[in-house]
Structures are given as structure tokens and as C-alpha cells.
Image 1: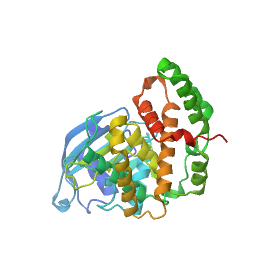
Image 2: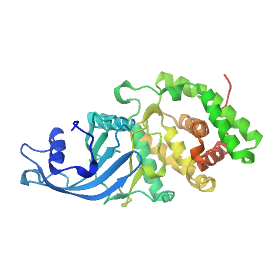
Image 3: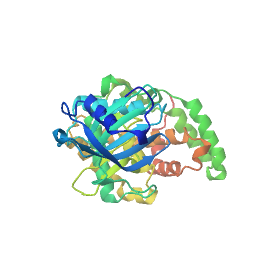
Image 4: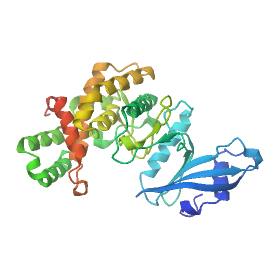
Length: 347
């Protein structure tokens, strides 16, 4: 599978047979006899196919449909997603796991990441871009997010530590981006708000957050891009949602994902209507999933700090291609609502 770049549209029955055999999924002598590309999706980083598969009689109990994702050559983050699913499979995937079942994950010499996953297109959906999910489906996402964080709670893969941008102050670079953003926005960013932005980017990470991260306290594996369109929502409300596209995962504080999901994408009025109920649902699910060393007060303060972190990453990582980036205004509304300026202390 590593001899040449993979063209997703040129896969063959023989290639699929080799993939499944290499993973020990086909019985000896079993083979794929035919397949059909049911649907295809292309993005800037990957091509994804829904593939229907037929086997010889010896493999009749195998899945009939797969979701095949192949990144473009050289996409560096693809290997991170392969590493994620390898770690899940090493622990042991079960039907109750909050992750899509991955049958095979590998990278080749051309920098392509290849993932063969369950096809959930007949039971789950993703809303159209910029169409927010219903409150019921948001509840599904919140439960899944909590279950995913509980799964990795203080047992992160291969002893991974928090990444550098989480621990270290990168204020100079972030300040430059913040200043460019303020100049781009002009009068829409008054001087008082500009000063708040400066304090945000120059005081992160907050001392208590850094201390706990260095100690490895209450850390988990975080997604870092948990927006509403990175979830697969179940048509059946009794079933769970799934969080997908794990190529950006890192070790960090769970509320970073939660704050980003709620504060960066919901307009302030709608966020205020659902935020606290979603926080309670998240925390209750976390506890039910086995996390017993994390108090409500710690969670509450972590959530506030994660709103600051969302502001740091958005305004401190701004560039002209993002334009006005409505996420920044939404997060800053939450920043004001939660009185997060009280958290900004200078060293």
C-alpha cells in the first residue's frame, strides 16, 4: 500500500482486499469481489468516499459499506488522525465508544493518511454549513464530547504532554496578529476593547491553568476544532452522535472544546438560552462516564478560562483571510458575560 500515491478514484477490488487482509479483517482466502462508490466528497486536504462492497461467500459477515478517507499527499496533520485511531484501537474500540469505528488506519511514503471507517451516512447526518443544529442534536453533541473527554481522562496516548502553545506564552506573535485584526476592524474595535485584547494575548496561559497542566491534573485528549459541523448527529434521538476529523488533537483541558463549541458559534442571545443547561449536561455526562476527581467548581472556573483561551487562539491567530471572523465577536460576548477579565492577571 506504500508503493505510490493513492488516487481514491482509482482504487480496485484487489486494493480493498489487500487493505482488509493486512488488517486481519478478511478470513484466509476471503476477498472483495466488487465495489461501488456510492458518494464522494473532496476538500482542500482529503478525498472521502462512501464505498459499497461485495465479498465472496466466506466473508458474508463483513460490513457492506465503508467510509474511506484519503488525505492529499503531504498533508502533515493526516498522520495525527491515524495516530488517534491507532490509539483508540489499542485501548479497544467497542460499540459504546464515542468514536466512529476505524477498521484500518495507516500512512504511506507520500504523506497520505488513509482511514477506513464505518459508514454512518444512513443513520447520521451533518447540518449544512452555517446551519446550526437543533437543541436536541446539540445535546447529542455535548454528551459525545463529554464521553470522549472521559475516555481519555488522565490516560492520554503514549504519555503525551500538553503542547507548547498551551503551556508557553507566545504573546509577541499573538500581539502582532491581534494588532493586525484591530487595524482591519477599525472603529469596530474601540480602544478599550483593544486594550482587553492586548491583556488577553499577553497573559495567556493563566497561571493556574499552566500549573495544573504541568502537573498533568484533569487533562484529557482534546479535539481543538469541535465546531457544530464536525459532529455526526443521529437521526434517532436515542442514539449517540460522533465527533469526527481528529487530525488536530492535543492534550489539554476538556473545557477548551466545550467553550469553543458554545461560545464561538452560537450567537449571544441563543447561547445564553442554552449555555448553562448544556454545561450541566456536559458535567453530568462526564461524571456518569467515570470522572470522579473533578469538582463542579473546578469545571466552572475551567470553562471561564477556556473562553479566554478561545479568544487567545482566535484573535491571536487572526490573519487577513479570516476577515471579520464573527467567532471573535461571539467569544468576546461570552468573555463579557462570564466576567473573564477578572481572570487576567499579570505575572
